[in-house]
Image (cartoon, rainbow, N blue to C red):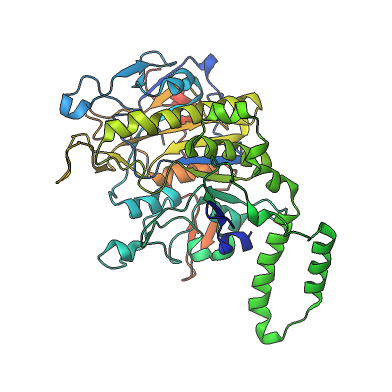
Length: 460
């Protein structure tokens, strides 16, 4: 495998609405009927993960009347929703906001990146205690399974299409591996595929999905039949059976044209690739669209390496010059394509980080350029597709975007909404190593995303 593109061996082998404040477009312009709960409407879910936590004040919940030390450096622009503004550096999103719901009152209690990431990706607190340092909070097989892994457990596939794909990089920083990225206590066979590589690079290629030179498909089938004829002793039967299950998954994937074609991003026209942006953000979103078209149920597209959006320093420079323009361009192209192909009706798209940023601007010791610190008490996310009612803002924060004034929604609620959209029953459970059952839907489905102001008790 080339340095810029790999898939790890493990990943390949296993080959309530009270108090909600809502502003929205007229119901006739909404994307879903007000009585629609969205159950089972999603065939795919795309989680666009902004690792590090973007500032709510400098993106989706600006406070232009706040003092300078809170408001920050950016201005605002009007959007497709009358009376609703977003950051001036999100012009394409502003134009497309009729497709999106902004949820401004996401909240939880964990301000640590590692623990908050586990909460965001699983809807559960990280199992603790693990010790007193971050090194004791890294990824563990005692973790709760993430969305894709849990779905793979309750709906195992045998058609060569993975239940989950994460791209373009694993969330690792030095010795620290962020928890919540795999199947946890369910075991490695349910881990989502983890792609390592930058799809914007000219030599990007899924080498793991190509036959070796000289190996034809007929020869590959012959090798498969020979392997199946080899017997094993009874004492080794269990471990060999587990390995052969993984081999079968790998075999199905290698012989599935859909998956192989999905990763061939070079088959896209230059015009399409330019439209998404020739950068890791844009091309990861283009790859995600291709995986949606191939039928992958859950895709996680992380916008940057771990802590890319962790803007303690140079918050406004990084957002203005790189992060927001690339995200804005890629998301707009993704939504245009999903709408044109009618895939948006059956694809739930979520854009969020693990938390937000502090209302008060600060400067780290030894630094000269200010930024914002971690803040989980109130932050914003975007939701669209699969029955979501577009053109609305759900929830209201205080004058500094510090705390919700209306009902807050937790990561457990977001994950429950994902399972609900995929048609997972409220009664579906997974069993941990201590034989305890856990409901997958452990929060409240965010029904205002579907029903809008009509059922929220707020003015429209």
